[in-house]
Image (cartoon, rainbow, N blue to C red; front, side, top):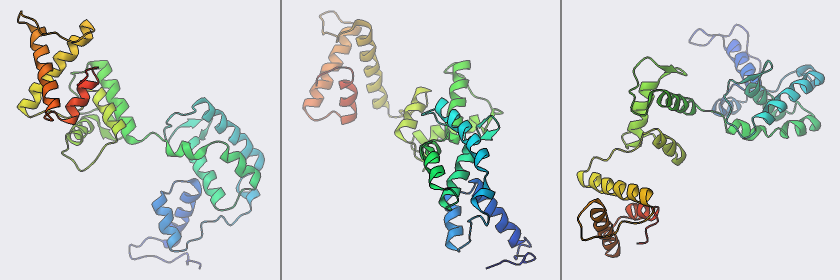
Length: 267
């Protein structure tokens, strides 16, 4: 079906112009998977109306391929910025474009084999996300200004206020948001001091004693012993024995027992 060039929708926008724009976005690999599914559902033909030779000259393609291959070999296993450019080629845009050519049957088997050898799928599945960019900015800020430094308004990273991002992540890790983070992300956030805040008084007391025990073990290389003389070591040893007793009585939570085991303590 051919859309008349002068056909305008209710919004006054040229439908023919809009469809042409979608075709170009598809060929460049700029459409999302959801957008491609929707366009496919209405039967819009994205397949280029030109021959494979007209789409990309083989000699030029091979030259670009070698540049992309060189770049990917240099950055193997790394997360790449979606906008990364190397020797005049936007790497991710080029990969997406070639993927779409293959899906439309434009390339011969030889070129398909060469392209697949790049491992393009894992590259596109492992791009640097907006979250990664903001996290690295936070790491840089704290490393340059200190772990206790306060982030002021006005630091814009990738279109987002770093202050707002930090505030949002704190809400997430404390369960005050519907958004969830992966375990890997939670570990990264913990590394820069963003972790669940303990509000319960007894919970705070337990973790304070736990940190005392951990510090003693790190300093002395052994567990504290109960002694006749009252002191920090005796107090810590008594507390540890009480935790062992609670464990035997089934009164110690699995989380607390696991933290004690990580210190090398047999319960």
